[in-house]
Length: 523
Image (cartoon, rainbow, N blue to C red; front, side):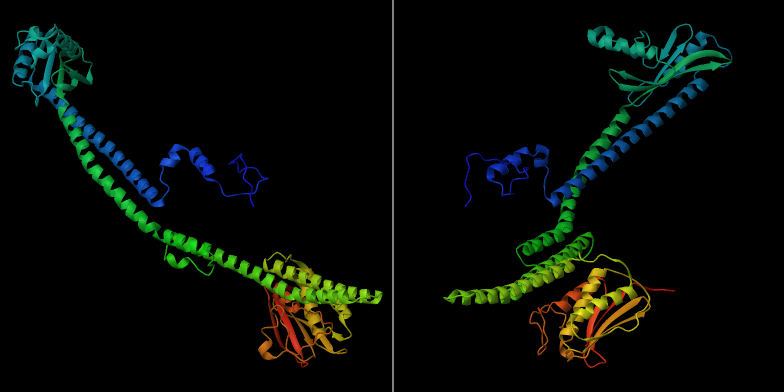
């Protein structure tokens, strides 16, 4: 039972602690440590996608608005500038006398020309400054010129008069070229100031101005239009993004639901069926592949535990029985103790061999037991066959072995061949035939072990490689065979990428053969 301490800590970084489920206090502390921006940002994929789409659309609309707003202003200003240039040209052609006029003649002609073009909301401001100080304009009040029109400046407040006096100064001192001047009554004015010359002499300096109110109105109209339709577009984009995100994430939600069932213990379920196409299907297929490997690993683990418990039960039963018999005897002699100890040693040795074989099978199943190297087949086979002769009094034969090399794990290949040969020895009588033949076809090398024993019934040939399988009626001379020899051989050969099979031998007994690729014959 866990003991509750008065000092509670939420620190999970200490390596000496065993991870435990966090308490509510820890959860609240962890939540409080999360930045506020992360807590405000939605965690759902649908909400994030819809917000992301809305943000992208808003940025696109903003960029389009800025471009159109500025483009509209630039286009209208360009048109105004062209109109101002045309007006200056018209004044130079029509508003000045011919020949070489004096300043009084220039002022008189300019006055006549300008008088026919009164200034207003839709008209242009004209100002002609003649050398000698004369100023002619169609808006004398704007320049504070008395005698050329109505002026009620004397009746205006002082602040307004000061503002208008500043306007007069800016208009009279406007630099050559284009400029913009803010007017108290007419708003911003676009002004073009240019000297009119003839024969190298300046006749007058002309300023032509046009209000920028149409530009402002056009830009405000663009802003209102974008505000209305942009808002509608943004709402539609957010809604469409949410619906699209919901449709896109539907396979992910089904995948999560299936994964929850798998997490509950049903490893037979697969998630690829919930995603018909696209990237989600790729993820689902990868997930299924992982599940298959996980299920295979669990199956191997269960099989290992089942096999071990099944086979270890027999020697443990023998040991327990012998100890119980010994315990029931009143007068136990040294011979009885030695006899029981001998039984126990034999069974312990059997359990050790069994555990070693099972661990070997497990390591081969996990593909950790193969370390390839280049093997010279002829000396390897001859040396191996010499050691196999020690397995029993049999007639061992080894025909000619092909010359060449093979890429394989020599230790595991030796173990596979010894297990197959031991199986042949165990199923033959003393003096019986055990033959190893090696043949090459292209880059494939085939090893075959034949004997003249009782053979393997055809219906059992596919099962002889099963773990703990024993053919019916097959004798096991020492009584210690666990039925793992051929299973280990099969696992080793498959780990090398080869194939193994059982068949009838020409000698009347059984043949167990396997084939491996990667043989390179000597030239």
